[in-house]
Image (tube, rainbow, N blue to C red; front, side, top):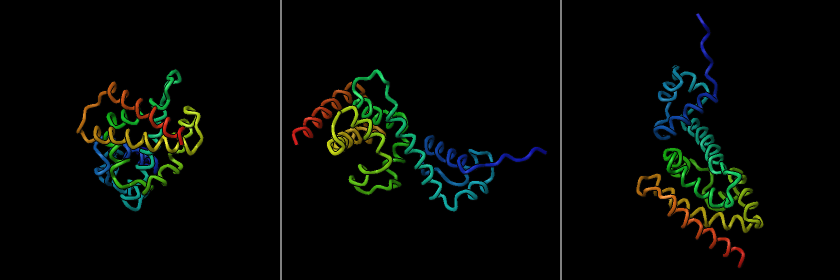
Length: 188
């Protein structure tokens, strides 16, 4: 009889991530993860004492995936800021369950805009933005906040099926907000 395959912690997190992606984080439980892994619930609960703990691990993986998604920008694009903003909205369009998990589930560690803007997870995005805009760190954070509120509004409405994705219209609006945000921080 061949030895049973060992279910690793990473395999359990990956399965939970896929469940969140396919049907929503609310469907992550020992049975659904075990079913995805084709095993009993024992390996799932071996690696995670609680389902809450497993969901937090899946949330962290989702955050890493989201950052990569945002920063997947063609080198030929002249407007990095526009691409990051559009990628944020595209994420809501293409990954609505993951978008809701990240931004509407209550799992975020940050409870304020100040905590979010200074978080380690946001550092790569701010770094790319700062280089593209040629602003100092504080100015970049201010532009990010203005853009984030605008883009997050669009993305949230789309992720919750209340608005159709119209890239041309969103692009036009995002360009206007971007220009206004840059102008505002340079005038300060």
